[in-house]
Image (cartoon, rainbow, N blue to C red):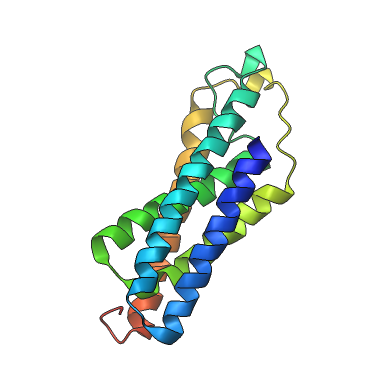
Length: 165
Protein backbone atom coordinates (compact mmCIF):
# COMPACT_ATOMS: atom_id res chain seq x y z
CA UNK A 1 0.00 0.00 0.00
CA UNK A 2 2.80 2.39 0.97
CA UNK A 3 4.79 1.88 -2.25
CA UNK A 4 1.64 1.89 -4.41
CA UNK A 5 0.49 5.26 -3.06
CA UNK A 6 3.98 6.70 -3.41
CA UNK A 7 4.20 5.35 -6.97
CA UNK A 8 0.91 7.06 -7.90
CA UNK A 9 2.17 10.28 -6.32
CA UNK A 10 5.45 9.94 -8.23
CA UNK A 11 3.61 9.44 -11.52
CA UNK A 12 1.53 12.55 -10.84
CA UNK A 13 4.67 14.48 -9.85
CA UNK A 14 6.24 13.39 -13.15
CA UNK A 15 3.19 14.53 -15.12
CA UNK A 16 3.15 17.88 -13.30
CA UNK A 17 6.87 18.33 -13.95
CA UNK A 18 6.32 17.51 -17.62
CA UNK A 19 3.60 20.15 -17.83
CA UNK A 20 5.88 22.67 -16.10
CA UNK A 21 8.68 21.98 -18.58
CA UNK A 22 6.22 22.16 -21.49
CA UNK A 23 5.18 25.60 -20.26
CA UNK A 24 8.74 26.82 -20.80
CA UNK A 25 8.36 26.29 -24.54
CA UNK A 26 4.72 27.10 -25.13
CA UNK A 27 3.76 29.71 -22.49
CA UNK A 28 0.23 28.32 -22.70
CA UNK A 29 -1.53 29.58 -19.54
CA UNK A 30 -3.63 26.41 -19.24
CA UNK A 31 -0.58 24.28 -18.47
CA UNK A 32 0.20 25.80 -15.03
CA UNK A 33 -3.43 25.29 -13.97
CA UNK A 34 -3.25 21.61 -14.94
CA UNK A 35 0.14 21.34 -13.27
CA UNK A 36 -1.25 22.82 -10.06
CA UNK A 37 -4.21 20.42 -10.10
CA UNK A 38 -2.03 17.36 -10.72
CA UNK A 39 0.35 18.45 -8.01
CA UNK A 40 -2.47 18.82 -5.50
CA UNK A 41 -3.68 15.33 -6.34
CA UNK A 42 -0.12 13.99 -6.05
CA UNK A 43 0.25 15.63 -2.62
CA UNK A 44 -2.99 13.92 -1.55
CA UNK A 45 -1.65 10.49 -2.56
CA UNK A 46 1.70 11.29 -0.99
CA UNK A 47 -0.01 12.19 2.28
CA UNK A 48 -1.70 8.78 2.20
CA UNK A 49 1.67 7.16 1.60
CA UNK A 50 3.26 9.05 4.50
CA UNK A 51 0.37 8.12 6.81
CA UNK A 52 0.85 4.49 5.80
CA UNK A 53 4.56 4.84 6.57
CA UNK A 54 3.74 6.25 10.02
CA UNK A 55 1.36 3.36 10.69
CA UNK A 56 4.03 0.81 9.75
CA UNK A 57 6.62 2.66 11.84
CA UNK A 58 4.34 2.65 14.88
CA UNK A 59 4.06 -1.16 14.82
CA UNK A 60 7.08 -1.10 17.11
CA UNK A 61 6.07 0.09 20.61
CA UNK A 62 9.41 1.91 20.95
CA UNK A 63 8.55 4.04 17.93
CA UNK A 64 5.18 5.31 19.21
CA UNK A 65 4.76 9.07 18.89
CA UNK A 66 7.81 9.44 16.64
CA UNK A 67 7.67 10.17 12.94
CA UNK A 68 9.57 7.93 10.53
CA UNK A 69 12.07 10.60 9.54
CA UNK A 70 14.94 8.61 11.01
CA UNK A 71 15.07 6.38 7.93
CA UNK A 72 16.36 7.46 4.54
CA UNK A 73 13.03 6.59 2.97
CA UNK A 74 11.16 8.69 5.53
CA UNK A 75 13.42 11.71 5.08
CA UNK A 76 13.27 11.60 1.28
CA UNK A 77 9.53 11.10 1.30
CA UNK A 78 9.04 13.98 3.74
CA UNK A 79 11.26 16.26 1.66
CA UNK A 80 9.36 15.50 -1.55
CA UNK A 81 6.04 16.04 0.22
CA UNK A 82 7.01 19.34 1.82
CA UNK A 83 8.57 20.58 -1.42
CA UNK A 84 5.29 19.92 -3.20
CA UNK A 85 3.30 21.65 -0.45
CA UNK A 86 5.55 24.70 -0.31
CA UNK A 87 5.48 24.94 -4.10
CA UNK A 88 1.68 24.71 -4.08
CA UNK A 89 1.58 27.63 -1.66
CA UNK A 90 4.09 29.74 -3.58
CA UNK A 91 2.48 29.01 -6.93
CA UNK A 92 -0.98 29.60 -5.52
CA UNK A 93 -0.02 33.05 -4.26
CA UNK A 94 2.49 34.17 -6.91
CA UNK A 95 1.07 32.55 -10.03
CA UNK A 96 4.53 32.23 -11.58
CA UNK A 97 3.82 29.68 -14.30
CA UNK A 98 7.49 29.15 -15.04
CA UNK A 99 8.37 28.30 -11.43
CA UNK A 100 7.37 24.64 -11.69
CA UNK A 101 10.12 23.97 -14.22
CA UNK A 102 12.74 24.84 -11.61
CA UNK A 103 11.17 23.50 -8.40
CA UNK A 104 9.28 20.35 -9.36
CA UNK A 105 12.35 18.42 -10.59
CA UNK A 106 13.55 18.44 -6.95
CA UNK A 107 10.23 16.94 -5.86
CA UNK A 108 10.49 14.35 -8.61
CA UNK A 109 14.10 13.55 -7.70
CA UNK A 110 13.49 13.09 -3.97
CA UNK A 111 10.22 11.22 -4.52
CA UNK A 112 11.95 8.87 -6.97
CA UNK A 113 14.82 8.32 -4.56
CA UNK A 114 12.31 7.49 -1.81
CA UNK A 115 10.81 4.87 -4.12
CA UNK A 116 14.22 3.23 -4.55
CA UNK A 117 14.97 3.00 -0.82
CA UNK A 118 13.50 0.22 1.30
CA UNK A 119 10.91 1.66 3.74
CA UNK A 120 11.54 -1.09 6.32
CA UNK A 121 11.48 0.22 9.88
CA UNK A 122 13.15 -1.08 13.01
CA UNK A 123 12.74 -0.17 16.68
CA UNK A 124 14.40 3.06 17.68
CA UNK A 125 17.55 2.83 19.75
CA UNK A 126 17.28 4.13 23.29
CA UNK A 127 19.53 7.12 22.51
CA UNK A 128 17.21 8.27 19.71
CA UNK A 129 14.03 8.41 21.76
CA UNK A 130 13.87 12.16 22.21
CA UNK A 131 11.22 14.66 21.20
CA UNK A 132 13.95 16.41 19.18
CA UNK A 133 13.84 13.50 16.78
CA UNK A 134 10.41 14.69 15.63
CA UNK A 135 11.49 18.31 15.34
CA UNK A 136 15.03 18.43 13.97
CA UNK A 137 14.90 16.31 10.76
CA UNK A 138 11.47 17.62 9.77
CA UNK A 139 12.51 21.26 10.13
CA UNK A 140 15.79 20.56 8.36
CA UNK A 141 13.98 19.13 5.31
CA UNK A 142 11.46 21.98 5.44
CA UNK A 143 14.35 24.45 5.31
CA UNK A 144 15.79 22.62 2.29
CA UNK A 145 12.45 22.88 0.53
CA UNK A 146 12.25 26.58 1.34
CA UNK A 147 15.68 27.10 -0.20
CA UNK A 148 14.73 24.98 -3.23
CA UNK A 149 11.65 27.12 -3.80
CA UNK A 150 13.61 30.34 -3.32
CA UNK A 151 16.18 29.07 -5.81
CA UNK A 152 13.36 28.29 -8.25
CA UNK A 153 11.85 31.76 -7.84
CA UNK A 154 15.25 33.31 -8.53
CA UNK A 155 15.75 31.25 -11.68
CA UNK A 156 12.19 31.94 -12.82
CA UNK A 157 12.77 35.67 -12.48
CA UNK A 158 16.05 35.43 -14.37
CA UNK A 159 14.63 33.37 -17.21
CA UNK A 160 11.29 35.19 -17.31
CA UNK A 161 12.87 38.61 -17.63
CA UNK A 162 12.00 39.91 -14.18
CA UNK A 163 8.30 39.09 -14.13
CA UNK A 164 8.56 35.29 -13.94
CA UNK A 165 6.01 34.66 -16.68
